[in-house]
Image 1 (cartoon, one colour):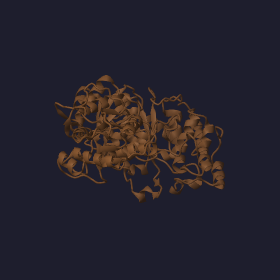
Image 2 (cartoon, rainbow over the protein chains, first blue to last red):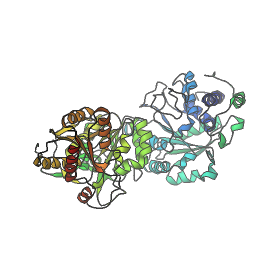
Image 3 (cartoon, rainbow over the protein chains, first blue to last red):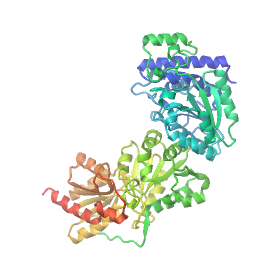
Image 4 (tube, each protein chain N blue to C red):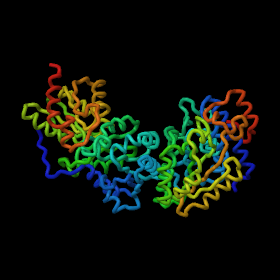
Length: 281
Length: 319
């Protein structure tokens, strides 16, 4: 371990503060799943990922991460800033004119850490597979990580990719699903039920593991364990249960905070629940 | 009229297959992907020599585009292959976000474009693909005219950094361009110098334009014929230079008149040099089943249609 669990939790707390402040600052964006994934991003970038903050597009010899559900950009931007990809002061520009921190992540403004645009859903798993195939061709044994939203799995391209990866033994790929059970129009169970995702992915030939995405110890151990499963002929799917809005009591578990910004009063309430640990931007 | 002859007829898709094989020999980063149409795309030679650099994705074009985009991140130069319809309309958003907006070095190679796909009919005959692709910021759009030019274009785009849409077709047509030509992206090819009208043609329509030029010569009309193989970026300079001389223009393409080469030329001329223009193109319609020749005739894409358009546009020239 590079950090203690307490240290990682402190980082996640700061990232959560940044998320609500960023979304409040431009009165737009997606706080719910950003908060829900703060522990995952912290574990990934501060503990699991073999990466360099001196960013190159190619990332030779590095683990690469792809975010498919691009709307949770606030959590990624804050994580990248605190990991050292760019100065955290830039977080104040989120979603504002002439910013590198676009509403959805993009390579277009050359923000370090981003390797593909995402936002239009369902495309990230295919891209991650492509990156994994290219690494294999190059003899680079690094890992490819991807994060997908659960609602996003309603997009058909995911299932094209889900069928492709096991058949082609893309086995340095660890895809996590942010399984918070919520999407814009309501619970996924009401909109278009995902049902037994474990059985579905296993039927396609994936090695599926389950983690609690809001328990730092569990997610760190889960991702490390996932790494030990790679190179054995199967892609890995981390079915990660999270709570939308985790860390901010009035947002927890509700799809209403998928894409809504807090007002001044709500911001104050959220920040009171989230200790400032690394210094606000 | 400069005389063009040919000794054989070949399909442009075979030019693509040959070019891909050559590009693969020259650069080990060239990789190919196909969505269950290896034979149609003539990828066999590449696959035989570089099996580890070929990815069969199955009938899953969206996944193919995404995988190709991902492969560029580690320095690969992916060539995706399927029919033009499934290379564009089916995967427009994947191309838009993962390739064009992300500025990935993907070569989208599209066979069976246009009516000349033939008997399969309108579900497969896309006539809108040039428009779809040219509207994407940063996308290069190329539609070569014969086997040799397609082979040269395929090799050239491997050396170009950025997203490219390469459009070619199914039928065998005359091979009349130089087998050793150097293909310059964005550079028009002067097929025949003339003074009375500028005929601008792309793809399969270039040979038809040559046939039309011969017929026009017999009528005493001296046609300048320009091959625009690169629809985007357009060779503005070559077009303006020609039109200044001739004063009228006919554009020829196996594509809908909405969104195609003709509209690109019209946009240029209307801002720089307003000029009478006629369009030889399909007229906002879907195709249908039939032989390629029957279809080209029925939908007004034959040499005779170019001749008629030239007569009309010359009549519209200011006295």
